[in-house]
Image (cartoon, rainbow, N blue to C red; front, side, top):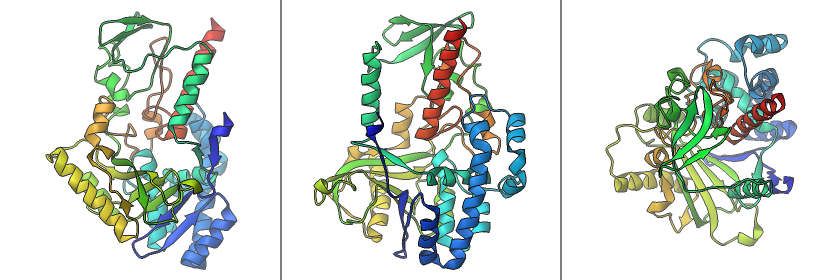
Length: 418
């Protein structure tokens, strides 16, 4: 169903409190000229050097890690050895993404922009490894949207699966994954019903397995270092309204004044006082909806569950003020403002995804070897496969889809060997 995918002309549009706006796309030469107009020739040359570094990083680690269902340190080193001198700046021990970016860019706004990629995998740029800079190059290859919205993808997958004989049972809670002699037997629902099968694909947080929520026979499958410590959570607004700006792209980022302050607040378990805000304007490409209510998603980075003692009403009011006051100061207002039920909080995410602690990205990426700590698709129990953002190769829709591909390949290989 390639017709569902629409390539976006812009990767993202970036806004700053000083009124500056910068568009980036998947054309290197065009980005060079855009950045030269934005920050001068020096900034453009700095960008080109940074881009080349991230390109070498991506090409070094794409096959041995991202597209490898069972990556190892030894194999990764051997595959990336030819380019090691080109990528050393991003592999220095304890060097953070923010430190790498600060060494490459002299413009503080560009430092904010290219440090932000740590948040794609649930980390702070101030304690995540410099190797995460490769995310810029991955994104520069192009971004796509699902025509009609992300939910259309799941609808289409459901439709295709049903045509091939799959049956879906929605709104059921699984209380246990049934295992006998290290082999999958099926699942038990919360109502006591048992469903027997040869394979179970688990697309939840691995921490639920570690903590025994799905059966005591599974809690030793996952090591503590594979789920602890937790990545970022978020406050997410989803609503329809008329925007005051008519120059929004599909993906928009509204930066704050002092980037580090946001992550100091999060590290302390507090809602950011001055957050950077991602705004998805889902209908920005649709001229028919111009001047009408458009669909929006706004994301504010947050800590996973903490000792926050705010009531739901207090949390809503505080998040509403900090979200929409910041956006209004940069020219973006909405009519009407979203209601209480439009906000999803870290606590809500923990309820939606048991044992996640509200974390949306699984394991915190702050360690250089995090890639090799995440659980992989295949585990020691025959017939059990793990997928999702909490397992290898990591969080984000593209990575989660790769994890699904790894699980499917493992099942197909197992079938052909029977």
